[in-house]
Length: 354
Image 1 (tube, helix red, strand yellow):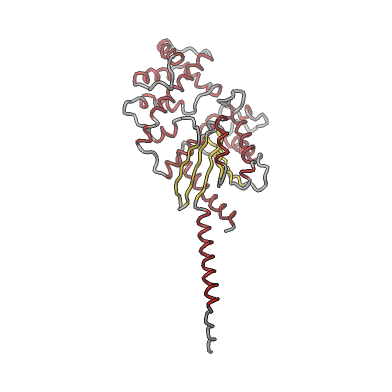
Image 2: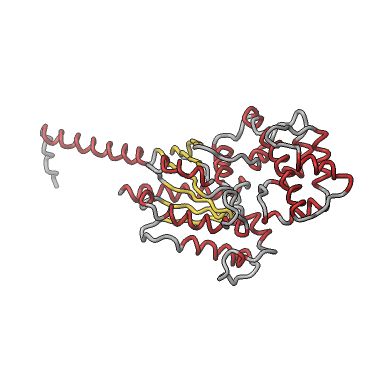
């Protein structure tokens, strides 16, 4: 059986086919360009762990911190040690916990003379600080830490005080993650993952820093909102009449329902799970939420807090994903980021119509 002769292509047909190929190529290019950069905005109240998450992105995707970069954290760790001990001594006086006679002079120095911003940590001072840290009165003051402003890293740096004070001390990556310096301004971490450019933007969470947030709101692919789970019985640095968890919930409500983020994926990090797991065994969540009846139970408490934040979403098309995180745990953050990455890539393509 014979085959019909193929009709020769006219010039018009050739032009149409070339135009079709151009359109296909343009669509492929637009698809690639659309997902070429993902901008992640890190928001949350002060002390929620945002900057630690940003540091983890550098460790996971940019080969960590160089020796030169880690050396910059040396004065920060010194400041953290001195600042933590000063707060502990002042708290011991407030609660009338008397230090032992052998540590009284060191306690007086911390309370009255030592300025953490103007002093470095010598090996001699470190030895005295270590002895004071082990004093029963200071340990009792530490147990009351939810009642005054003490950084979460206090025990970590004070346990390491003699190492941190060595003349040749170079902070480890763990030290860098634990080191606390208040974020001011806007910090960006950019990296490529699976041929996609990610830009993680970290802005200060203290009330005085929030006026700068608006400058970062444009072209945001996803918003990562960090909440310190362990802060449910603590007060703000800025206002000791305001509960930190209540402040985070109010701030999340404001952000998640903002006109800026109606079509933005929202990632909720219920962070500091390690500290929360330890605290919830001895402090009931009902000190923050009187309606909570789940007892001293980690799972019940985290589910209750998650529901509290989820209930603030007033827009039906909101993409909200929640993760329980420990920002100082690189393995945990790597796992969570991989899950987020896949969600964002899929959502970007879905929204764009590809």
